[in-house]
Length: 285
Image (cartoon, rainbow, N blue to C red):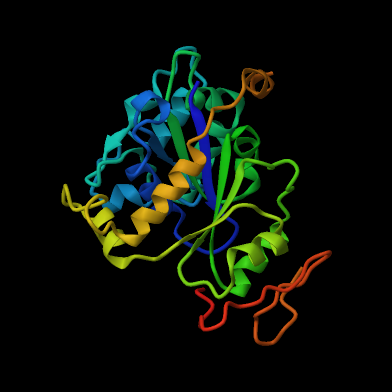
């Protein structure tokens, strides 16, 4: 059975898709017995990668969702495309209507079965769900790891706090990936939001451009000075490339507000304010 890693955000567009691409690109070669991960673009608002890389309309997420209810749905990998950055991905068509329905089908029992596969399937599915909505809650429940992607300012971090993820329910399988500049230290964010660990992903413009380039071979993740984004993504990849869900859990699967005018404190029940790191400017939002 495959491992399932869900990546998403609670508001805005902090870079969940780019984060998923980066993690897939630097996935530890020793994980999953050498089986490469597959990224699945499952954003209810519609996909971006099909247009970005000039891919055909099929195969796509719609094909996977349509086959989920059939007696023999086929393999998830049959709908995957090879991206120029070296990542294999199941992409989604643009458009909210068809994609939202496809995500709902994937979140149902039959759809989860296609994503996770059977006892003979190995590897990891990196599921980019875009915004965390009620449509994807069943997928969060069965995920081995959940990566919450957010910008580093007071406003986006307050939205994370207000979303109210149950720390006990996600204990050991929730990571907060903070993208771009952030005036707060990881320890303060962890204490305030009750999320651990917190990892920082620098917005490395060159790496993002290379990874999203339609030209093959533009990405560089190795060398004397690896790009900052890819270095941080490698740390995140090793964090989520842990043991897959237990057999018991697999069986179960199938049967506040900002109160300061300067925006530098987060307030809420039983929470303390975030204290900016001295010398760091900007909110990163």
